[in-house]
Amino acid sequence: MPKVEVKNLYKIFGSNPKKIIPLLEKGKGKAEILKSTGHGVGVNNANFQVEEGEIFVVMGLSGSGKSTLIRCLNLLIRPTAGEVRIDGENIAASNKEALLKIRRKKIAMVFQNFALLPHRTVESNVEFGLEIQGVNPNTRRERAREALRLVGLEGHEDRMPSQLSGGMQQRVGLARALANDPDILLMDEAFSALDPLIRKEMQDELLALQTKMHKTIIFITHDLDEALKLGDKIAIMKDGVIVQTGTPEDILTNPADDYVREFVQDVNRVKVVTASTIMRRPDPIAYAKDGVRVAVRKMREASISSIFVVDRDRHLKGILSIDKAVDLLKAGAHEPESVKDAIDTNVETVSPDTSIETLLPLVINSKYPIVVVDEEQKVVGIIMKVSVLSGILGEDDENV
Image (cartoon, rainbow, N blue to C red; front, side, top):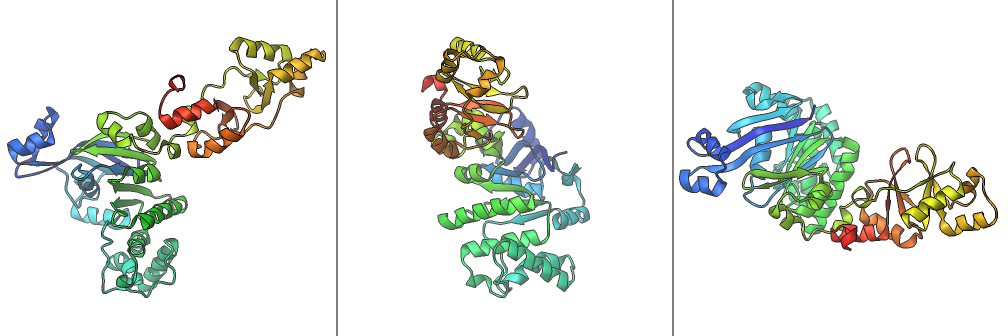
């Protein structure tokens, strides 16, 4: 079961919003509906799932509907139609009491403008949500200080918000959300008001925190680089519609339409595209049990000058070059196991999620192709130098 599931979600602003849904279903667009009916389309039939522990980024330009969408997830804005399911429960159908409990226990929100109380200390700001819940002062203080420690503000408990930098204020806002220990964090343009350098630090901080917390995070941004850096999955919105959902690599390598294609055309692919996208099938390969003559025949048939050698379970043993094989044959090696005598074990291996940025120095300095192995160290692919170049350019190998 997904942690969050959004099904057929609509939010339309106006005097009679439900009458607009059939128009949207017939393909009428946001601008046309506003002109003909005076109704504003915030979210148009949104559907997506967020798995537990995932960072799900919703990205779009101003007016795309992304902030409306995130406010529908905790019902700060009531949807016109559709479902918002948290752990399988449709909270859109919840009464006030049940919704209040969900907001206090399961969902916390971090806003763009920090939303700190200027007359309260840092610690008191972090305690605020717990105070509203009636948590006793000792527990409040303990949880607030732990949250401040997590975000790197230990020692600043007694300072006032006005004494903090923008980045530090945003950390207080994040600590306040974490103090409630929610399952789900909603972050609405949380870093967009920060200077670029501080923004990058906060992005790094969030990723570091996520390795410890494993929260389910839904993050809103208008910045594609931020989306690619933070998101396990990304949904791109335009005019209230989610036009594509996928991993950063999916969106970069397979844009759904021209709108998405324009978004990603200037992205630095080196940091996003991974080995799994650019690797080739590891064929042909030789087995450790093969004789040298078998390995040579495979190389000749494939017009290659070296071949990777694996065991029966496809665990990498090394690589055999044609020169070594010929030397063995000249020396009179005929036994099937003699291929083991000539393999070079100095072969670089990487995991499928290794970025091109990490691959580049390996490819440059290795005399052999790079081998991609899975968690069990089984060979799943190989990477040639031309494959890395094609990955950077976003083209197929044969077009490079």
